[in-house]
Length: 334
Image 1 (cartoon, rainbow, N blue to C red):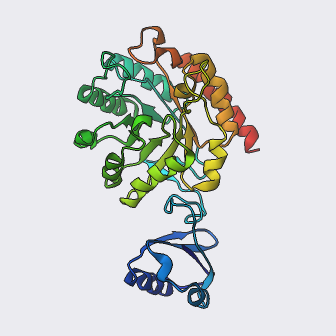
Image 2: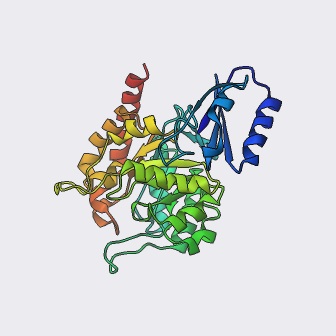
Image 3: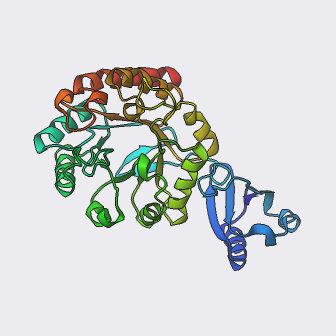
């Protein structure tokens, strides 16, 4: 349920109303927009007399929310949320590019790529330290050493780092990580989502391989219900009957998510297609669809990459992509 307050309501009146809701065992979420304040109520709202509530002089309107996701719902928070990562903002008109290799392989590799993508305009560095692989015999990442190398790349370039957490037992190792990524395979690892929700770190939540938009938003709700509202949604393609691409990039998810949720939405065209030559056109299409950012795999030597070389672009290709993305955004916002 949400209650929209009238303009001019004092802070004291708002606090008094919220205290009353809390006495009924409800969680209260206050969203203060430019033109109106919305109070979101989570819990058993059946005990609330809507007629009584609407009769209060400070209430403009009351609505029930039928969707199971509450905190992530745009009805709860009409304005776009902005996630601030050490000064790098995503959402609410702030567009960012996240770039880097699928997997951290060596110090020279991650530093080379980090310096290159920063020069081309990337504002965050991605890189896998722990890698979920389909085969147990494939490269599983450098793990703790990989995190150390990512932190060194951040020290050298100033780029905040984004890396994937696979196991709750590894959470202490992520203390200095800027953005925790929850990968597609862990989108519905609810115990992991709960623990990430207890942190105060931004979370990049990827859509599962065969999950609906509703399921994606319910996973975001798990994180938010545990107290962490700094969430970035990532569309990375879903499994369909198509075999020519690794996954099918669902670009319709971008405007749909913006309609349903206030959380920022980024697109990963690398995992979505699995082919380096498709990354640029899909990235541009994602920008045109309204994405708040892109997550692109960049490797200085894709042919010899230990992980996902086929979908990685070179720093030179990323530089061209970044320039074309800037031009598209200029047209969109002109």
